[in-house]
Image 1 (spheres, rainbow, N blue to C red):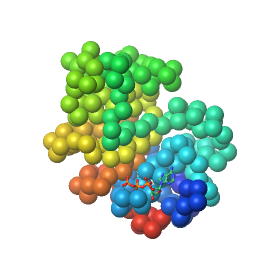
Image 2 (cartoon, protein in one colour):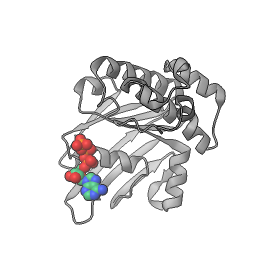
Image 3 (tube, helix red, strand yellow):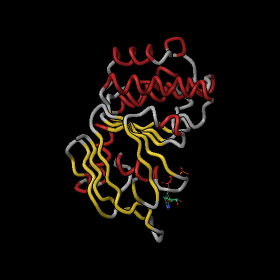
Image 4 (tube, helix red, strand yellow):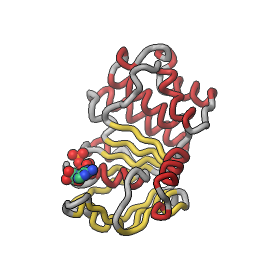
Length: 215
Ligand SMILES: Nc1ncnc2c1ncn2[C@@H]1O[C@H](COP(=O)(O)OP(=O)(O)OP(=O)(O)O)[C@@H](O)[C@H]1O
């Protein structure tokens, strides 16, 4: 199993419990949709799975590493090695071209592979956009760059938080199709937060967060 979350609890300072004993697991090549009402803790769980935050109790194992054993530096290294993120806001670097954005995370992780980046650019339909800047792209184009940037270092876990939340229906379908195809090609695991039941049903498994628990 790539990711195992077991009986995880999480509260923020002085707050009510957000996660109250959450368990789930995800293997290489599997895709899982996480749904739930606003404020139910979806992004919180995504952040814990990606070693972006710490939890109060329970256990999370990613690629055989028990996250509780890591300090800040260890978590940062694990994220660099294994995890990639795609957000609703595309979060491209405005001063870098599409090509530079595409290879940025792979370069930062010392994993830049020009052939793989070329392949991603082709698959994502970015070949003719490589010299443009993000402000000159549509939302769908920007999200395709963000997906390429995320997958360029060949992460084992892709975390996507409402990746199509800012896109119209056509762009949304296109971005989801491309993301699922590339995830399948790379055997990455995908944990995707969505409010859309239509999107959720495209993934292998669907779970819902409610009252701090998975159902
Ligand atoms: N850093 C934080 N400090 C304190 N409270 C937080 C923090 N982050 C999130 N929360 C609270 O935790 C709860 C769960 O937030 P979270 O963002 O995980 O929910 P969500 O299901 O992703 O919501 P949405 O669908 O609206 O994005 C909310 O009540 C939120 O206000």
